[in-house]
Length: 115
Image (cartoon, rainbow, N blue to C red):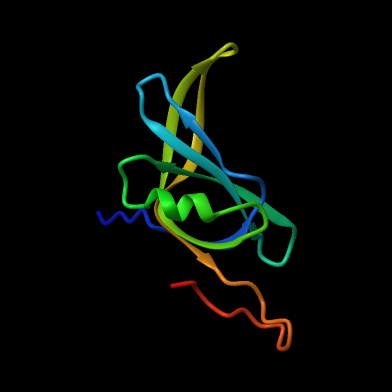
């Protein structure tokens, strides 16, 4: 049996990224990336970037709401407890994020990834 768990998203950051410290002491930066749902509405997807991973902190500090980004990683399911009991969250665990340049005002086309 072959299994592949690879996610690649290109979309717009829907809200300001939030950095949290988990009870374990690990830090995670959470953001929502809106992607078009096959010609329909925008679908906001949760993305988690864990400290100690491949994504550098300075890259995350530059990402803000409404930025266009390219995200790659894998789909994960995280379990946690809240006041309402045991819960789970399915999210993209990012192993890489690139901030994309905006559209060229003259042509209306994107300029690609920032280096």
